[in-house]
Length: 178
Length: 122
Length: 187
View (tube, helix red, strand yellow):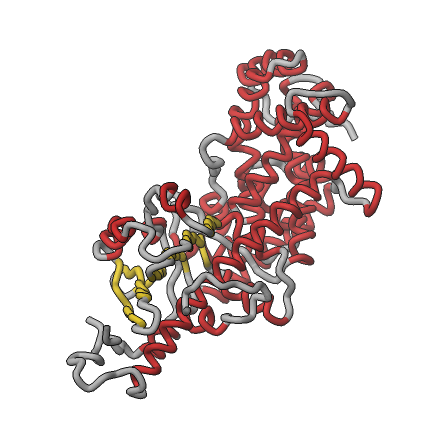
């Protein structure tokens, strides 16, 4: 399958700053307990604003922690569901239909979609917009063995977030870029 | 409006989130159970309550942490780990997108026969 | 230090609080929960307006009521309950503000979900930011004065300050607020 990429002035958009948001930017994630039951590895993160404040208090003010702390400033919530399976096509692609429906309505805008021929993975990045203001981010990652949904509510610098890759000090391989 | 009027306006009463009183009660009950469990002998909450109490006692002896501070630190560290994990997953996904877009821009992965391989989003 | 002077006289409320206190002292958790409900708005408002953080405000407010439960036998009557709550909340808030300045460089100045109907949103935001820049003690003095309409003598008792210190905090705090609002006003 050929790689297809839509160029969207990604550098400019990645640098775009998102304004503070309301609760509408939080996706209603469906019950994924069935996926979890079949998965080899599951990541389920749900951090609301109160927990973000708590977490930020335990980040130092120097180095990479300072960069992360800066990123957290203005966030209202971070929600991640990620599933890795031990064999290809082990999950029903319709599991994300409801999420995709939400991302195609209201204030959500598809920023970019990429597909990798190498590993057959699709990555979609979506922004929530109200008029000329943006206030939420969603990322869908699917491949034959992986399924990840990320929803960030609030103000986030996408470029800053991208550049934190590799600086978290926690080895992680969820097959996002296999 | 003068400053005092503005202060009155800005400082109007705010209700706590729903269920506040219930949560306070639950905490009081939990503290009472923990206190009973730490007093020795089996309790309804079993070994977990005992372990939590033992850990708290050790911390108190070791470094002067109050149990409340221990709970706060534990919760904050757990939240920190979750946040870092979430940000790592997100940044990796964004890096993947960025790399693929850059590759497409340089033509590295754009076969000639793929019409519309590059174009503007929306 | 024992709380000796009640605040406002409200016989009806005080009698109800008396009954609930007696029952709560006897171990009635329903009565204790009812006491919490009756006074949660007062305690939470003070915490929230001081720290401007919903999560921290709830934590502080919970701490106050948990402490209340542990000290029910120290309260002489329902008349003293309000003063006790205000006093304990104020001290916990001041402690929390002091700790936060050391722990985090983030200035969490969140906004309440909805501005009061007759408030000017921009002015309120400027004012709240200006309040957040006062010292913890000065902030509490100003808040108790304009949120609870306390007299300086009542504020002095709640915060364990001398009357002169309260007046000084009020005078300087208001002057600073006026100056900062002047700076922040669009030209």
